[in-house]
Each structure stands twice: as structure tokens, then as C-alpha cells.
Image 1 (spheres, rainbow, N blue to C red):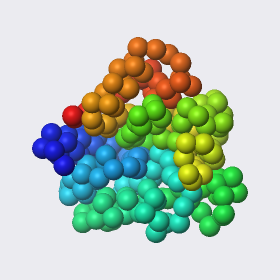
Image 2 (cartoon, rainbow, N blue to C red):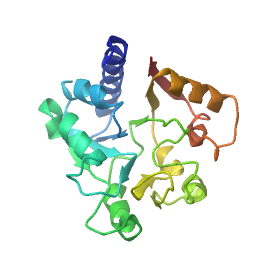
Image 3 (cartoon, rainbow, N blue to C red):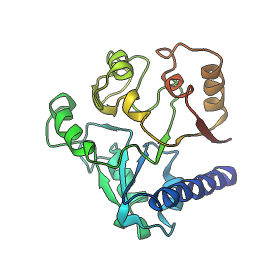
Image 4 (cartoon, rainbow, N blue to C red):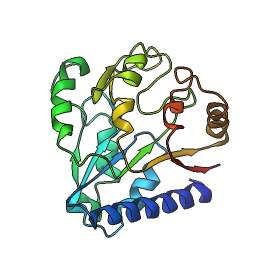
Amino acid sequence: MTQARQQLAEQLAEAVAKALEEDLGRQERVLLIVSGGSTPVPFFQALAAKPLAWERVDITLADERWVDAESSDSNARLVRENLLQGNAAAAHFVPLTSSASTPEEGVAEVARRTAGLAWPASVIILGMGGDGHTASLFPDSQELGLALATDEPLVAVRTPSQPQPRITFSAARLHQASRHILHITGDDKRTVLASALSGDDVRQLPIRAFLSCPLAIYWAP
């Protein structure tokens, strides 16, 4: 972990904690939506140490691989092991998987489970892949058009470039937030973002779906 990336994680944790605290001053419960992958781990650890009223915070994921909760590929496991620790162990975490064998079979149950969260979210933290995907909005997914256009909250996703089926919040539901943050690291991601900013074909680079709304960008080399 470079010093710059650790500093970025600390700054992001400070900003998110402040945002959650502001909203907790106005409402009984708040919702934080996070993303998986390796990039957010130091941010999760820094945020977990913040002295918030965590028992009033709901946390869920922008998307998830349809795998067992104990799988090393599970974003829920990543959140449990790195964010739901210390002070933040008191938060209410809502995973995006069920006991159903496929996301197509489980999506309705997960939609019911997440409907009762404190929407609009206080903060949504998005990541971005080298192909310009965010959440599970992949450019090569046959469900991309649906995920970009539907008013349904969640979409089951099959993507040729990914080994596991997935479930993702739709673009419309991910827009239901007071604050959007993009957390990325590395020169390659900066190049992809620059490309996304210079065009408007959302299907080519799905992160573009969120460039039309205020988006705070947290980047380090």
C-alpha cells in the first residue's frame, strides 16, 4: 500500500463519516452503499474506526457476485472482515444474495430486503474497472441496457468477461443518493476516466451513467 493510497483512504473515510454524521443529525437512519474489490479495503478500515452512531447506519453493496457468503469472491465477506469491525460492527449490513441458486431466482427477495433501507442513500461509493464498468454495469453484459433503463431496483447480470453471475443495483436506483463518490487508484484508471469524460456512449464505458450528476472523484497513483 503506497502512502498516497493510504492517505486517500483516510481522506475518503473522513469525508464519508462527516456526511453520515450530518445526515444522522436530520434523520433517524442513514444508508451507505459501498463497492467491493481490493481498492476500498484501506478505506473500509479507516471508516470503521470513526466514532459514529453506527447502530443507526444501514450498509449495503452496489453489486455482488452470486457466490456463497464465505467465498473469497464475496463482496459481503470483504465488508464483514474490513468494515463491520470495531465501532462499525454495530451497523446494520444488508447483503445482496439469498439462498436461491441463481440471481434471477433471488432478485425479487433481495429487492424486498433492500426496499426498506433509508433511501435515498446518504453516500454511494462507486468503483471502476479498466473496462469502464461500475457496480456490475459491464460493457459486454447482455443485461446492460436493462440495468441502465429499468426502474426496477436490482438486475441479475450475466457477463462473458466474468466467471460468476452477479446482482447489481440498477443505474436508476444508484442515482438515488445525496452524494456520489468515485474511488479509484492507478494511472490506468485515470486514463479510463479521462476517456469516459471525453465521450458520451454509456454502453461503451458505463461509468458515464454517473458523470452527469455531481461526482466527487478520489484518486491516487
